[in-house]
Image (cartoon, rainbow, N blue to C red; front, side):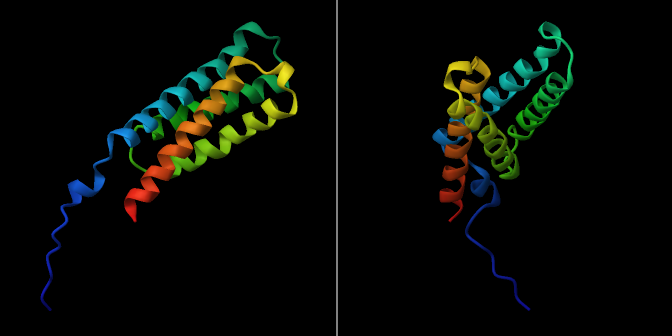
Length: 123
């Protein structure tokens, strides 16, 4: 069997547009800041189960920010899904919204735009 060589270089396939790079970098920074804000609640709130769950959620955001440094789509999808939970809190009671909820909304927008750009480029 004769192998046919493709004209497409695999390195070219992994290159991202500047807008895609910027949106993924913004999502990574937002996920890192959101995670740090969730974990920092351990220092300024009384320890109870809801604060511990919030800190655990923050650790997931920090781990997702590490995943957003790469090129995989899974970290983008998980970031969107996890940021949707903050959107529910933001929409249900806007008067009690904190900075972290607004940053989760920014994470949702930037991660979903990076995912959309990546999916559009792969087609």
